[in-house]
Length: 364
Ligand code: PMP
Image 1 (cartoon, rainbow, N blue to C red):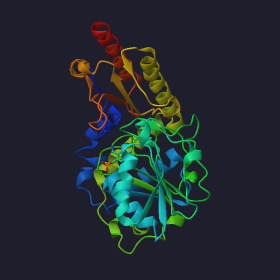
Image 2: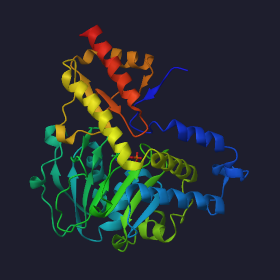
Image 3: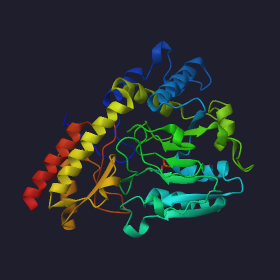
Image 4: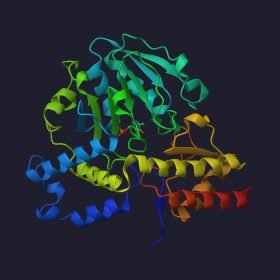
């Protein structure tokens, strides 16, 4: 079979070893005689899967016990409404707009209360995170919302070690980490809430993980649906409804795989190497370019353009013929985008660069 590298932004490539394990366990999970899809979510088998999945996730991100880990549905877009419902409590909230996803968060949250834009890089075309000095933060806000990695625009909060965050004077930070969670070390204690849809670095779509400090569980609006009440879900092991059991199971396999790779610190080194390879190539090219401020370039989602956009279709067609899939940029921004999540091996990035080099030689 031809070697395929899938650069989709999500749902995205999963580790082959995980898919093979799921295949092997598909019909009969650990001698239970059942597929995970057929199990009661309250039975002992699935309970053991959920407990192990949560424990491994906590280990990977070093999550203190004061934080609850919730396995919810609705995805990150649902959280745009669920967050203000759970946290606003009659106050205002500050949002920082760094790309298409945080902009969408503002639009969705506005129905629920006083949502203020503390800073925005829209006027630059979303090529950077606005300088912290320009953020107009309100010390009485219920929370500050950020998206630490903008999947569409390819903008990530800066930081060589941990992500660099501004001082919010005690106002909790709520971070959409959908597209870079588990790709790098983070200090969970600097956030009130971390959330992300699963379909990039975690597993299949249908699952949304929310990590929330227990101090933030008592301010939900009475209108919050029970399935979206973090407090209710925290008190019920995310089982007030039927959770997305198969997605949770695959997430658990991904976490085991990640631990076997050496955990987040080890995968982060690989992610840095992969991203450097591609950015260095783009910067050395006069055929392709990426225009994101260097400090805010995403390690996970790398948009790039051909200087001659008339070659876009030929570029994509040729890439597909080489087994380099889903490189088309998001329809909002055009161009190309290579998403290189944890499960993308460095060989995929090398194959992409080899193809790009060939294509530039032929058409340059
Ligand atoms: N936020 C970010 C950063 C995303 O990348 C995405 C999906 N690509 C979303 C939110 C929306 O996620 P979903 O469609 O799962 O609700």
